Amino acid sequence: GAVVSQHPSRVICKSGTSVKIECRSLDFQATTMFWYRQFPKQSLMLMATSNEGSKATYEQGVEKDKFLINHASLTLSTLTVTSAHPEDSSFYICSAGKSTGNTIYGTQYFGPGTRLLVL
Amino acid sequence: AQKVTQAQTEISVVEKEDVTLDCVYETRDTTYYLFWYKQPPSGELVFLIRRNSFDEQNEISGRYSWNFQKSTSSFNFTITASQVVDSAVYFCALSEPKAAGNKLTFGGGTRVLVKP
Image (cartoon, rainbow over all chains, first blue to last red; front, side, top):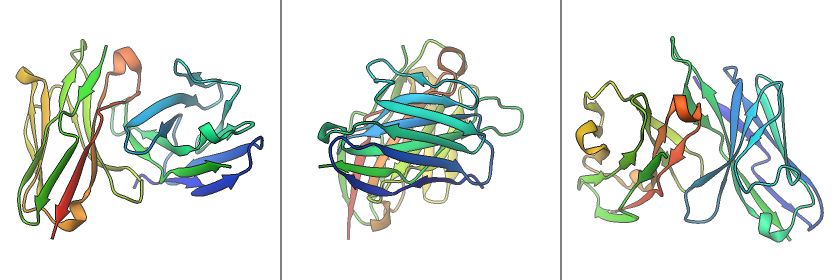
């Protein structure tokens, strides 16, 4: 299988607080995980690439101090939205790449997503 | 630069009709991968298929089929005899291992509404 979990599934917080979202690959190891953001009725926007044991690579326009990513193990990556504001409200989705056979670049399997609402 | 275009933003059909979703991509690499994902109302993206650039064989999986044509840079997806449970947003995506590692570039998505 290739199951990716995310926690929490939904979070409501007050403006100014920080929120941590966990992404876990349950039945495989993932050296690389990805974090996406999705606004209503829009496509997924890649925020950053999370590499186990090293710093994350952020896409242009994404504030690394705002969205802290930690990839502490081969099965866990976390995204922390620091000092959240209402404009950070969105659907955050993580994915983990699973390699098959001799293919280095695997298929990405997605978590169920986290809906963040900042009041 | 890699780009994926899904020209149809929304398609509405009646149950049992066939529906074809178009996907056109742009890439400079000779080695690349194409994907289709389904996103039901719950939000989770469900992997449907992966195809590498060297494999142009069409594929059928149950009511789903895919038509990959390198000559037109297209990777179209057909749902045969659609059902209400097929209602979702479908995303086509591209990855270029050499240029972008395992990153995915998504199309804008096509919302499919299957009415009973």
